[in-house]
Length: 268
Image 1 (cartoon, rainbow, N blue to C red):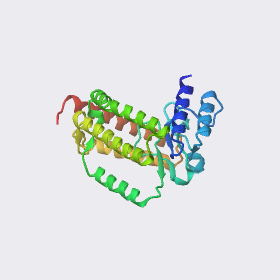
Image 2: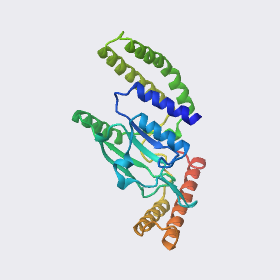
Image 3: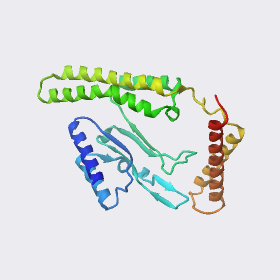
Image 4: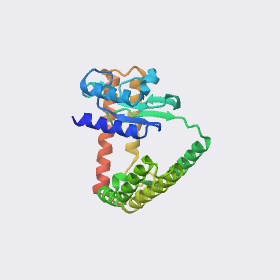
């Protein structure tokens, strides 16, 4: 019942903005090709919202996205869905050199028709990669959540009023666009102000002062053994598979120990 209600809520949101292009991606925790109740509910949602699976657009990338070697479990439960197939230039299921998650990441590239938009995005990306980054794992997320909720609540009322006025044609399109831009600026300002207060901003590697040569060697061994394992077809038994698992566990164990020591012994 909860799952059905959630899909109905998502469908209603899609209906409100049916003239906009849509991308939905993540862990669906269900195999869409199965014929059970949950998979059927998801498939109906896709059809109602006119969404297309990217793994159907790129059949060569149709692969298991959840892989737990230790338990011997694997399935395709992570998906990317789009409303406009013409804008998708690439989709792939990635296999990082080092990945401690049971899920494989998805890559989705969407084309933009406006060159100035692409240039602006590239400029913002270049600026982002050269600056200090917010460390959410070190921040006071509870205070951030409370602060943003408190300051964003008035904007919710303003958005609801704008939508009501637009539906009854009490406001023209230009005025609505100006209001949206103003609200967007206010939202960004609230989020950034709260982050400045409750989330530390540091250079890359600032909190990894505990990283040493041994960790570098263990990471290199994990990467090399994983490459060798992939090269022979990813077997689930044998010496190469056992070496891959051993190197992976050693690196992960040492990484956790160093992280714990960095939190309990050392200071910045």
